[in-house]
Amino acid sequence: MPELRSCRSFLRRMLRISAGLGFLLLYALSIAHAQVLYQDQLAQVDHLPSLAARTHDPSDVLLTSLHTIIRDDAICCDRDSALQDSAQAADPKSLKDVASKLEGRHLLADGRPIKVTTEFLTPDAVNSGHLIQMILDQHPPLMEWNSHVYVVHGVVYAWTASGSEDSTAVYTVIRKFLLWDTRYADSRRDVVFDRATDDPNKVQGLLFVLTAAQ
Image (cartoon, rainbow, N blue to C red; front, top):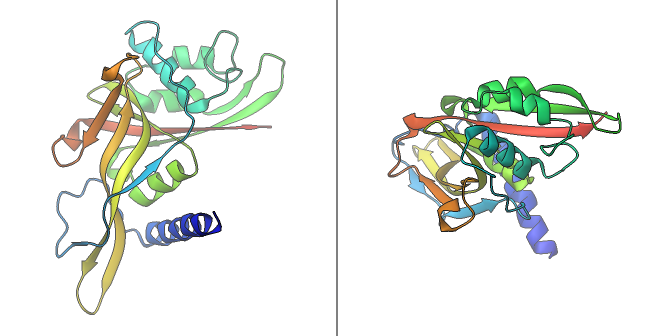
């Protein structure tokens, strides 16, 4: 197990270094002189609850998806939870609006305050190193694709090198997003966004939601 922890620690350092260099554009359609260094890697979030929305109504789907990634009934999104009213007031087809509604200070049912921090990313602002890092740290985002909200429970990515003999950049490229569609509890639940075959222009953005006691 020490070797596994060491490997994960090295990966996190590499991702931070790469992110700081600014090489990681998620939706780059081509990479000149690029070379894949390793086979595809998997980053995923463990122990997410398998929740299904009561109906296919976008509001129910949003609440269930938020409940899945926040994983705390007192915070979201059951009755009397801290974020229920704010989440219900948000446009379920706009993660940007969801982010603005959830951001800030909220109260639990017993009066204790919590702070909610949101990060909404448009496709052109997504940094693959940052995204992989967040998933490795067990922070799953929501993804809005074709005006529908999905839970991102993992990504498939590869390390790639690009440049010349004198200057080479090493960075990550995300190949697939592993998604859950919370409208379903059967095999239709598992969905894959594949960059090789799916249109990135139909992705409206991603949303991270982090909570902490105040």
